[in-house]
Length: 411
Image (tube, rainbow, N blue to C red):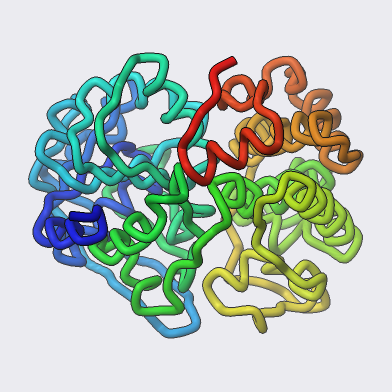
């Protein structure tokens, strides 16, 4: 019987969510409110804060939840299990969602791999090359479990955990809900089942009931289609003067009202973002994989290429207009994940691929250089490498064979 035929087993299956940050909590709560039983896990030392009082309060979803079709879901969700043990969290679960920053992938994967069970489907949200890292670590640990692994270009929402006086509350505020996301599995032979399984996750309901998921051309497509590096890095680095002066010279006295979308984005930065994107497109074409296609008009908007994710391709907010919806979304300093994750992961992988495939990436490289100077960190030295993904030694044909069929050639 095919894996797709076995997908009926997912009905009623408990969902395991790994990660206690904003995305993990929102996904877990949304799945509960969508009808799933849910286990949620985070690891120490972060769990002491992220999971504190969760058994008493649950998680409450609220916010604007903007999207083209008006899908909204609010309410308070309580979980069947709250734990700091990955083994305890995933036991017996057919659907596992990994919702942690890329820098935490290895820590979570090391504990997840020994407790994988045949038939599990793992969704990495967002992927950020996590599928490649997980498969590599499975080979290193000699794990041959029959699991499906795939990732998504983004999270289903823009979300944050509300705080009060520096204390984390039990509320997650959703700015928008995606109506489509791009997904792929490794290998691509599992892709139909992987995409179909998203229908059994409550956190994908706005997508399932929206335009549905889009099938990426290999998981490298999903890496290229992650909008974060192309949006966050130019916006934060080139808008750093406004960001650091916000609440001092600009924006009154409240630094927390700042947003790169509302206060940094402009035509000049959009031109840089578009040139960054064209370097990604050239890389994808040279490698023979896919990438989500955007016309230049989408960059010339305060919502940039994020807008089509929740409002469709016609979403344009002119730079001449204010964009109050995004007020308060930050970032508020240069040592934010918009830089400390998106530069060493997204930008540095593009830099490495450029060297391997003979594609010049001057705009991407400028982001790495500027970020290194501004933060005092050498992101060229500490950035994610192709060897970290297990693909540095593969030729173009060998990589495509691995991505599509799972046949891997050892170094």
